Length: 139
Length: 114
Image (cartoon, rainbow over all chains, first blue to last red):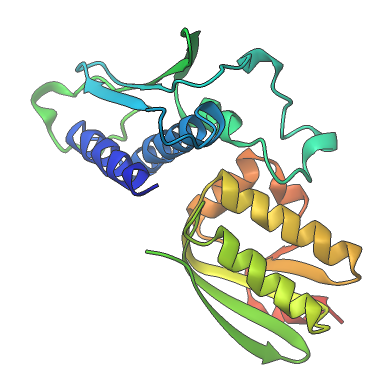
């Protein structure tokens, strides 16, 4: 699982380079952490013969993270809501929920085999001249 | 940084001072073992001081919920003290804020066990 830390560090670096504030950097790195762990544990079922591919990009308007596993796949629309009263005391099942909450857009695509997860964090438009005028950037 | 756990006793309450991350492979299991040990030894009042915990992932949240429920099932209680902003936000996002008894200051937390 050491590689999870490496991917997180790369995501943090990308987020820092994009000028995200500390809260947003935290949301991005946590979503990436959850996505990679999900891919290794639930996607690939911890099978060391299967791989997880990660790519990340700053397009200027958004940060795009793509994480693909080689597992059996799943239906993301059929996951129970972990914040529903009947599920609150469950010990698992919060990963995808957190990813959806922390990022601006989340898309799943079924591969053959595997699942590709795309996560997007929109970047606030840069102010002219990038002046430090004390105005908070949008989220 | 992995999780470090220090234990102390205050007025019959076991306070676990946690520091670091509670994440898969870095603290979840340590926390589970620490709480299991305490309950096994007959401790019934456990307060987790999270003031120095800056990161909990879904696995760590799950571990905290499991600790809460297994303690409750055995007549013990686990409460939380001093959440950092990030942890506070996570507990609100997941609605676990409604599950745990959470305190900002230690004296009030200790008093709540009486």
